[in-house]
Image (cartoon, rainbow, N blue to C red; front, side, top):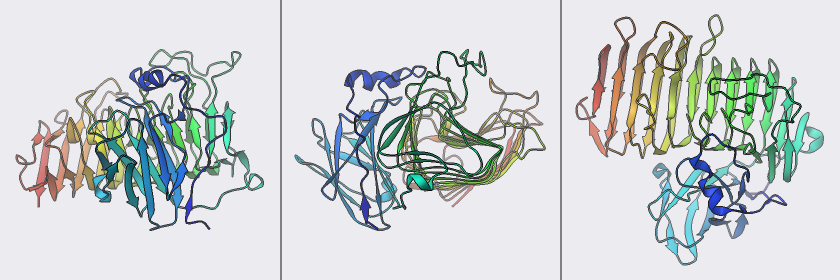
Length: 478
């Protein structure tokens, strides 16, 4: 098997017809992007001297965000040359935890990788036209006759809706771009008016109470042509044994990947780029035994969050692990427990992850790492372990019980035993812990080996941790 595999460029896909319009699309969070994903006008990329296709998608801040991917055997050195339109005087490689450095000359940006992961290039100290390079493991390609479900080879394709049956796979071969098409005029909505006043139509890719289902391959799913909330992109509801692997999702009109009442699900090495409100990355809802790893998210809403939206006796959420993921957060939360939770959540771990940019300043309850509930759930035993926050404009951590727009219950909930261990917070931003009332408290929030702006801190005051009413047993230790 080859040490390095470079996917082909899809025939027929071009650069944006209107590059400036494509760039500005992300400024409007409630509209479709009619040009969809395009080849990048900002970057060219070469791996060991071979050209790699580079794509571009609108994003909330700056943009477009260019992205590319290859497969490489573990520990294989790859020599990269990235050429930016108009040149670059200096380039920063993120995450810093990868320990990479770049040399910049008239011929481009030169750097070397020897690991899997997601490397983002920021040129000349701004965020206007970043490039993210994803290096994933080499996998055995599937042939059409091996796939029960849908197979998409290299090239540009269209899809309307698909319902998974037991054992089905959707496979997107390297070089495939699959565009979700707007609903036909004669299709009836499943909901005439949602909370945002929008009509909702059938889910694009839906798995309902099925087992052993897969969405795989290094192709791209492009939802740019759908109006805001027109279709949910992808829902696994009540499923067992789910795998979503390697796929890149672009410009979804609602939550990207929704795991709802699932048991034993794995999300491996996916990439997500989007700008629209409610375009969450991975939402793990009322599910158990879930493993999310080695993925990248830059969307217009939450990145990787857990919720419990189904009443008992269904499981609220437990035994969930998110690790080795990289987030660029333009608006809301990077990792954590989020809002509308009407059932108990326990035993959730976020581990060995990087926050490369976070602008969690939309509303008060946000932050990079969040445990935030607005319903009656008891949330307990939540661990954030070895997280590097390279940038944040609001709060590094936020633990909060409240009532708000998203509340479904009359009662508020409670939070118990949240641990932040080995956090490295580069910016000098604070943390906040707050309950809601005497019966709705936060108890047991522990910071261990906390580093702020490069300095270990051993007091709540030095760590800028604000402890508000109805919060107790908040500790910090080296």
